[in-house]
Amino acid sequence: MLSGKKELLKEYIDFIHENDEETLPGLITVFEAANLNGWNIDEYYYSSIPEQLDTFSELEDLGNRVYYVKLLNQLAAYNLNQRRYDVAINYILDYMQIAVTMDLYREFITTIGMFENVRTLATTEQLMKYQNILQGYIMKKALVATFMLMTFLSIVIPVSSSPSNPTITPFNHGVNG
Image (cartoon, rainbow, N blue to C red; front, side, top):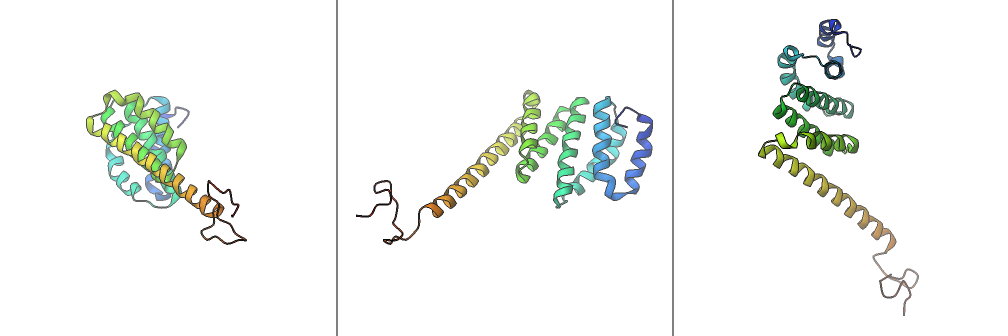
């Protein structure tokens, strides 16, 4: 299918419907093929995707979450190709939020690029959500950095002071007296 053989699409879709464990990776392949080959597969998109996305969003194991993020990426690209910018932007923002939650740096950067390409088409609500996600990411990184610094300082600077374990201050450099 990825090489452009659209005649395999129906058979492949039937296969992934019959094999639950193949549904998520199979949908990624279907939409990747559509995006690579410029196919319109709206009939399948509208009949299957909305109900399945709710199920996929609730999956908690890491492997399925990564697949879910990849599917959101393909769905965003598909909807951009179909010129459904509002829908595409919502997928991008969902993709971005999950990338932040899962600490997927590369995917996060990808979503920023995708969003910035369509920023002028975003609604005020979408722009606010984008800003909130970015601010959340910055706060998360700041909290991690603060925690790491405090941990480092607690190792380097002992809490109690004794002659064999002097307190280091900016003024005495560990020298007592």
